[in-house]
Image (cartoon, rainbow, N blue to C red; front, side):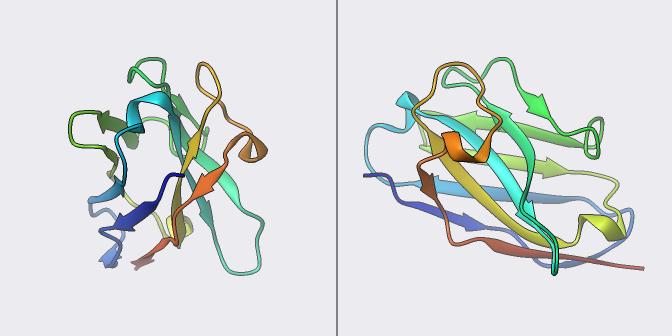
Length: 124
């Protein structure tokens, strides 16, 4: 069992930067590929970024490529999402998730464990 807790979400202005964190319980964090997903009001959940167990081969959705950076620290059981140049359309609840899959899974159904989410609101 993996428990995930996101933090760092808050109200920011367009163009600002924000860093989300995801803390994982247990000692098996390095066995999971990790991902960030988001869901805006009235919209389906969408993938944002993902990273392999070793921290290589990150994936980014086209909408965040060049602005967001996913990283992980296996020694600290932590996942991060650095978000720069935030836009109004980045407003959403952001979730971190863990997948036992190999490589960098990008489908949400590959992820077995989910956090409770953290709200990011970008204002003009």
